[in-house]
Length: 192
Image 1 (cartoon, rainbow, N blue to C red):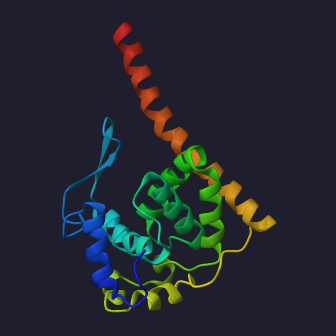
Image 2: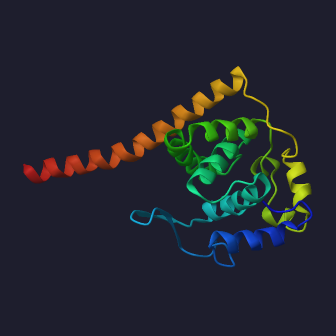
Image 3: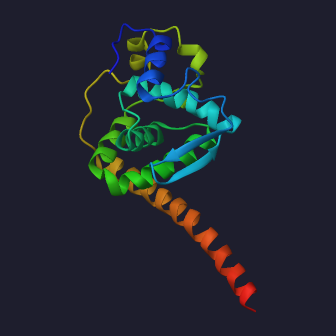
């Protein structure tokens, strides 16, 4: 956790160092590698992804979620609940994180989702990272509504959580089903 008095730019610099990122946060690399030591998946570092990740990283700072698997599913749930605006890459990547979170950290996922329902995101506020880098981190947290305590969830939160879970699982199933169907079709063609 970074102190409220720290400038967002300095907190981000420290965040990159602690998280093992390069000085540029990996924003300029053509590919971002996601995964475990034994299974790594390349994700193209498109302009849309970089635009979203610049804000995503600031959300990590403000909300206090680490860059571990659990932290990523929490920040994904928080961002989905708070709104990803026009950032398609944020919606897609966060839905994947949410699907993973359903299996590895469902309680933490729920808590982050409820917290996000009571917060704002930089995506929704229409701000860029340049807009906030010179603010004290406490000001950013205040603008996002992260200063108060998290309350327990409501029935509305539960319905919203279920809807996002369904969308996340559907997206995940499509990601697996489409390549398998194509592979099966190719195998059938090769066999005939």
